[in-house]
Structures are given as structure tokens and as C-alpha cells.
Image 1 (cartoon, one colour):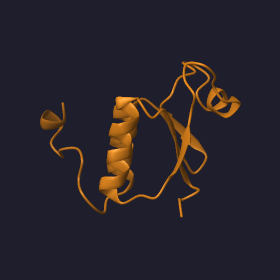
Image 2 (cartoon, rainbow, N blue to C red; image 1 turned 180 degrees about the vertical axis):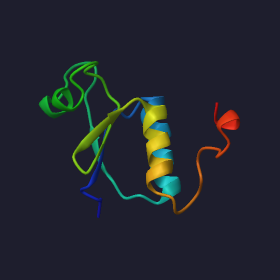
Image 3 (cartoon, rainbow, N blue to C red; image 1 turned 60 degrees about the vertical axis):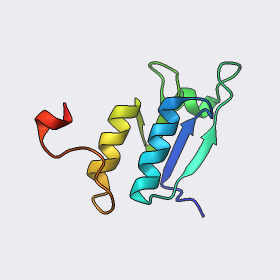
Length: 95
């Protein structure tokens, strides 16, 4: 059963969605996937969660939305310490 605290709004053909999905799977995080029908229509919830760019990709954790795949991956890596480390610890290596 998916974790209701973690929801991912994405599109099946988006490489940015896929890389966040892989990060969630590497960390062993259960999540609910919400498929958006881009570019034909966007859900009201997506528009509410990302009012600035009104685009996918959005991760919602405990009701707080995050946009942009790299930001989301860094958040996942820093929030869930257990499991596989995604980003290097050294700032230079990370850059």
C-alpha cells in the first residue's frame, strides 16, 4: 500500500518523473503516483501545488509540495537517511 504522506505527480513519458521514481525506489519509500495527462489537461490539484510554473513534476511530502527533479532527489536523499545514498556527501563531488 502506498504511503499517503508521499505523493508524486508526474507523467509516464517524462524522464524527470522516472528519475524521481528511481530515487524513491532506491530509498525504499512507498508513495502514491498521480498520473497527469500533460499537455492536454492539468488537474486542479497540480495547479494548486505548483502555482508558479504549473508543470509536473511535483512531490508532496506531509502536505508540502516540492518541484524540480534535482531538488526533489536532494530532498529525498537528505530526508530518508536509510538505504542507498543517492548524492555524494562532498559538495564538490555533488556539484
